[in-house]
Image (cartoon, rainbow, N blue to C red; front, side, top):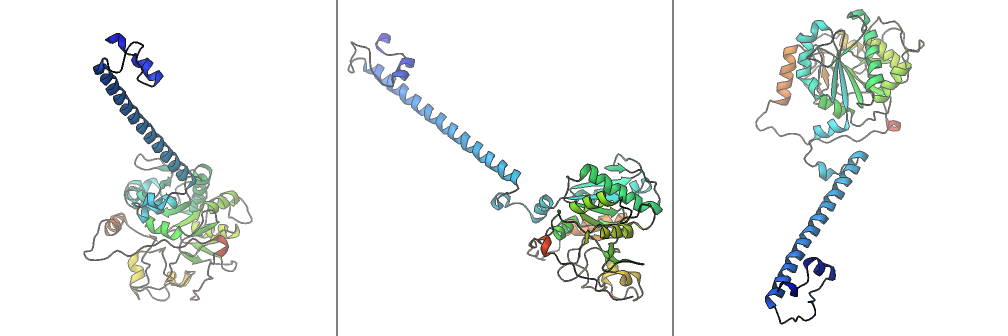
Length: 369
């Protein structure tokens, strides 16, 4: 009976159920049934392989499409539906933070910055004169003296430009007693292009002989440069007609004068209600009306009018100064762990993008002397 039927390989080539001459459909019926059953089993198996192959091709094409979208920066909103607003900002507004410190304060200040707000920066480095195993440090050549802060600042920004300018969109300078709400910083920066030469902080009036609308940002509460502002500063700081070449003198004031002469815009960091978001002091200094007299230096030297009252503090502050290590953790707790029963979260939306040609920076409005 075995000689009456075509071999399996031959049958697949011929594609039918033809028997050898001398045989008939009526003979060996059981053998024909076996052959037909075998054919049906092969057809099902082949169909399964075809389905698997088609599914694999579909998955491969979908993955390729996603890669192309991600590399082009156009990610569908539906694909990121589970992404929080803070995560979206972290992805789209990359902030590199650098903290000016010294070995004396590595353990008592810098490590606490690293454990609190510093970990929320896209990248963070501590500019100091000695390395530390607990900190991502960049060792500067300038001595640890207050008198050469301007020199250390020039060296720090120059290093970032030479080695890390493509790693972030914005470059935030802070002290080791500064607290930064990084999410609010990104929210403030979101409308602006990092390709525009601009920087933000708490604006002070320029003292001494100066040009109209010349200002500088408080070094204590920190200031943030766009990627383009970093480039302009690093490539222009050796111009003796625009930037102080000596390392001495006030760091924040010389930074402001240099950037002004290099045509880097001093942005207005206030919110839509004209409330400040960078503060060179602690929060209670801004909340308690009458805490200081009218002769207080902050009122006198602010570029934009400053008041102290319970409604004067922005709901989205960016930075405070003179924050002790213990207060860093208090700030962290009340902003990231504390919950208030029954309080509804606000409906948060990102602001509209501002084109460079549409940017308008108000003149100073503080006429108090």
